[in-house]
Image (spheres, rainbow, N blue to C red):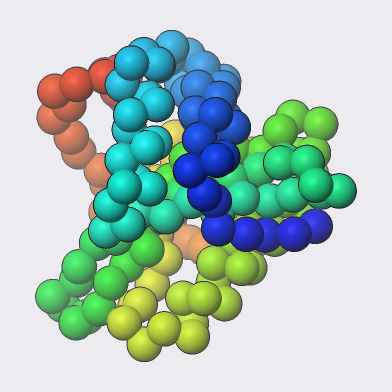
Length: 155
């Protein structure tokens, strides 16, 4: 398995994976008129985030995106994992574990990074188990939001 940075040439895979992710995990149908430009925006401005892809025999099989949150309490940056998707036929084969290991190694080597966070749907117990096995734990924070564009949460 090879983990690599995504490029603009990967936009269609990423948009397709994000579409499948939203439908599968939240029953949401994403608007392609928002989704594709949203993915493209990450490539146009790296301050917005970064995509990582997993390949097996040259085939794209998984992804995750990171975004950044400044922590004044820690004088450092948290990487937020978002848009995690693994092709159904590759689930359970270590794709996310490899993506996470790659990200964690990069983060630990960068003194500006103070931690890694992600949010997971309360009902997605399988994902929570996977994240727990990788050493992640529940935060004492809950996420609250007010959404103005795109799918609304159904918390």
